[in-house]
Image (cartoon, rainbow, N blue to C red; front, side, top):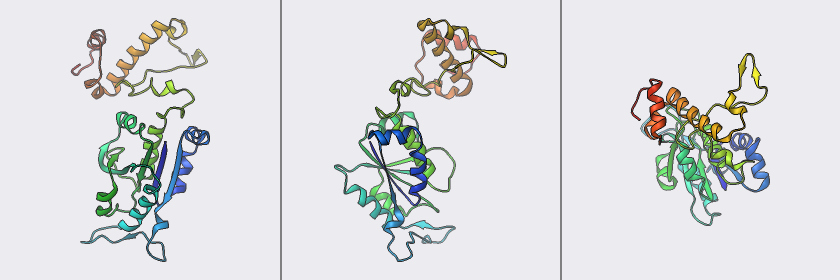
Length: 246
């Protein structure tokens, strides 16, 4: 997979993404991270890419020309037009399902805004997907792009050392992940659950599933509305007085 990031701060994005797992994936050739500095496409000698908004208002807007030229420099190198993802609080909220969908793409372009945003006309021309990582505002789209790229890339085959890790984890089946433990067996008076020491894989799997259901009910009961639960699991929640429709 190739990820192209259009930004005013490519060193910020690439420095973060190339750390640890994604960096090793790029070294192996499984992933490609390409930063494009929008300022390189400025249309003036001072490399300014922003100006005051028409109609007045606080702050500055990124001009359409440099953004379009930065996009075109990438799009012209692609075999087919890749999806362009604009990180904005106005987009649909990013989740694991969307990550899985985007992980199937061969190339993606991420557009990071700054200042008060980007001129609407260029967004209408190039953007295919508007994504948000939550109902809050950041100083720019770089941190949001890094979060989205990390989530997508780890689902690309070969990125994780153990691809099964991406399949059995939080949200993979609509539930939160079960609690996990490692050595020592006892820490500050707290012991590892006996079932995990039993070596009985069937019992371990059953315990983990039950813990996922219970943890979801406690911490994110809203997720249970879409989760597929067995009748036994529904009865378990009723016994423990968890509220909400199953």
